[in-house]
Amino acid sequence: MTKSVLYRVGLPTLVGISIIGLWQLMSALGAINPIMIPSPWDISVGFSELVTRGYFWQATWVTLQETLYGFAIGVSLGLIIGALTGTFPMFRTAIYPFVIAFQNTPRVALAPIFLTWFGFGITSKVVMAAVICFFPVVINTVAGMASVGDNAKMLFRSLGASRAQMFFRLTLPGASAVAFAGIKTALTLALLGAIVAEFVGGSVGLGVLIKELNFQLEVAKGFAVVLFLAVIGLVLYGLIELLERFLITWKHD
Image (cartoon, rainbow, N blue to C red; front, side, top):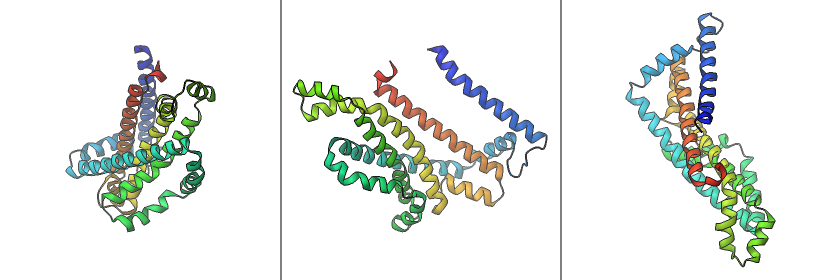
């Protein structure tokens, strides 16, 4: 167990340190234009300045709220629609084509529409985050329910199980691992949706901060915010993975 943890943590850490070291070396040798791509040292200095500013943490809090609220709404709706689609063939026939059509619509193009409908406050960003993470949850939930074997279903029917018993004791546990894969993807997409909405029309948030820093030619600080967002995404993804390990114990036996 300890060896596995060291391997999973140590190897990515070693690769990350190697990339940063090579990046810093290339910057010191002048092989990389510092205006286009600042050195890791300059980025770290910029980040150390940002964390002392109150507006940075305010922007972080706003973006986190947009992401988590949108994620909660998008996942809840995705699980409900996915479960209904996988359970009732008539519902799948009636609704699923619209879900697919909605997925093929470029969600970034919806951001200005949401701004018109919901204004420039947090609501439009939450809606954008919810919309962009909705589809992978639906697809993975439907796929997970379809992966439950016919033999298992036949066994449950032969034992006189009701539809509710089959759903909660067979279909739901069988589909949960696949559904969680969609949930983990949805969380990163929710963060992306919140940032995109802030780019299009926001007054506060990390996306707005990145735009302002770039306009002010504070490129190193802009890179620092982008890398900070990557860290936030990794932390949130890790929390969902821990939740998965806690809830779906049989997958990790």
